[in-house]
Length: 133
Image 1 (cartoon, one colour):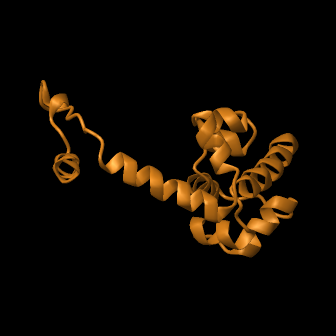
Image 2: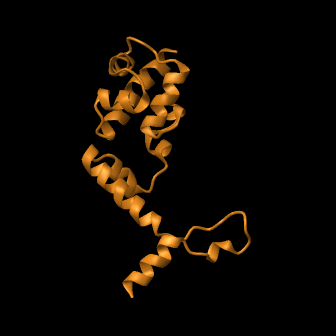
């Protein structure tokens, strides 16, 4: 248990800092009191399973990564450019997220339910192409 507790403390802080979050930011995103995040990082308390899942979700990593059973880079499963962006400050990360969402909104979306539906275009994609010509 001691090695898991140590791994959790280190990984939690590293992942939080990698994303540019304060303890308050992470607490708010996870629905946990900022003081609890501090206690988890210092080892004064061990999070419940529920809190551990909330923290992993807020950090967008697996629970395995938080307890040291998976490497942080592997847990994130991102293209290297996105991993690098995730290490940027919160303002840059938010800008990257907004740009990515805007780009993906205009992609063609295949439908898994209909055969041959992969050739259909997303409605915004058609409109955007008509506006360009």
